[in-house]
View 1: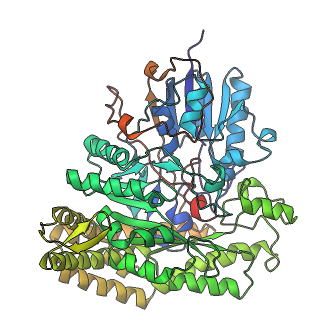
View 2: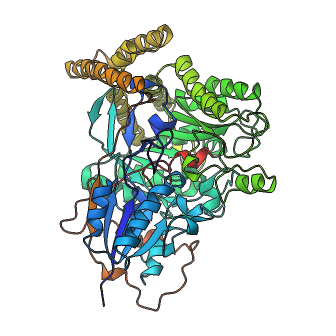
View 3: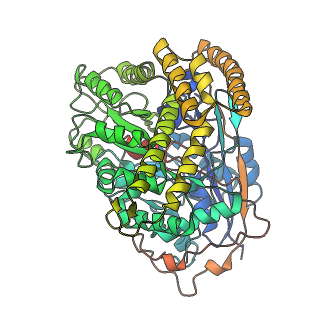
Length: 620
C-alpha cells in the first residue's frame, strides 16, 4: 500500500500581473501597497506574507507533508513529479483561475493524485464546475485533514514558529523580516453582513489557542527559536475573548516578557477593555472596522470613533481604520461625505474597499433575493474594482474604480505619508507613557488586573513590567526614526514636508540627536528612495499604478509523525469542539534538522494566493 504524501500549495505566480489567470489591480501579494497605503508611491511600505495556514496544517497532520509557498509554475510542476498521493491547493476567490490551471494539470499528468481544495475560494457556489477536485476542505483545515487521514482530531495543537513577512522594504531599501505570526482562532461572532470570515465559520468563533497561557507559549516558543518578540495576530477580533487577553498579560507580567502585538479588534471591545489595558498588553497596531459614519453595525453604535482613535494614537497605538464604499445609502454626495468623514478620523492607516458580496455572506444572499447580483467573473471579486451588484446611483464600472482610487489619493494628500504618521504616534505615545508612568509612581498607583485600571495602593510597589514596556516602546520609536528624512525629502506637499520637519524636532527633544548610525540610515533611505522613485516613474509611464513585486518562493518538508494517528476508528470531527486545551498545549521541540526560521506569516486575505487576506476580514 502506497504511503500517503501530501503537498500543500499556494497558487502559482506571478502575482499582481494581468494575464490569463490573474489581475493586476487588487491582486498583488501585498496588503499595504494594494489596499492601505495605495497611491502613496515610494512612501508605501512593501510587504509580502507567507501562506501561514499551510504551515499550521503541515505541522499538525501525521502524513509526510511538503509546503510549497509562492511557487512559480515551473516549480509547481517540478514538485508534482516527485510523487504525491494528495495535493492541497489553497486559494482565495480572485485566484480561482490559478487554482483551475493547477488542478487541470494534476488531472492531466498525475491522474492518480487526489486534489483537495481549501481556503476562502471554497465559498464559490459553482466551484465543482470550475476547478476539478476530489475533496473540499470547507471548514478549519487542521481538524479536517486530521479526520481525512485518520489522525486523532483532538491531539494537542502544535503552533508552528511562523516568521514573516516573506519580504519587506521601505523607500526601496530591503530589510530583514523579524516579526512573528500568531493564529489564535478563526471566525467572528459579530456577524457583519459583508464579512466572509464571519459567515464562513457560521458567525461563531473557533479558538485554536484557547487561553492566555496558550498564546504566551506560542510567543515564548518563537522567541526561543529566533528571538522574535513582536507578533502579528491573525484573529478576526482577538480582544473579543477578554479572558484570554487578560491571561496573556498576566503571563507576560509573571515572566517579564513585554511582547508586542499587531491585531484586529472592534471598537466596542476596545472601549470595554480600555486603552490603558491595550498599552500594557503591548498592542502596537490595532485594525478597527469603522465602515461608515451612517453605520448600523453594533460594533460602533454609540461610540465616538474619532475620539477613540485619537486616544489610542495619543497613547502610542497605531490605528488602521477600514471603511466600505458604495453601500446602499451612498449616492454621489453621501459617498464623498463618507470619504471626508473617514479622512477626518485622522487614523494612521486607512483602508478603503468597495462593497463586495461574497458568496456565503448575508450581503450576497440579500442581493440575490433582490435580483441585483451582476455576472462579474470571480477573478474580479477583490474589492478594488467594479461592483459585483447593481447600485442604484453608480451604474458605471469606471466610477467604482476611480472613486476608490481618489479616496486613497485624498487621504494621502490630506495627511501625508502613513509611515510619517506612524512615527508621530510612536514618539508621542512613548513620551506620554513615560510621563504617565512617572506620575503613577509619584501617586503610588499600581495596576489592578481585576478592574483593568491603575489605582492607589496601600503598599505600592515599583511597576517593573511597565518599565520593560517603556523600553520596548522606546526601541520601536528609535527603529522608525530613520524614515523621517526621506519622508520630508519626498513629501507630496508643503504641509507634509513641514510635518516631517516638526516631527524630527520632536524626536530630537525626546530622544536626543540621532546617532551617526541613525544618520547614515536616514541618508541611505534618501538614496534608495531616489532609485525607487525612478523605478516607479518608469512603471507608471507604462500604465501601471505601482511597481509589481514578486515574493520569494519557499519549500518546507515535514516528516511522517505517527504519534498523531488515531488509536481508535476515526470519528466525525466537531469543528466547534474545544479539544485543544491549555493543559495540553506545550512548547514542542522542533524536529531535528527542520529549519522553520523562514516559516510563514500573515496577511489575512490577500496575502498569498491563499490564505484569508486581510482585505476580506473587515472590508467586504
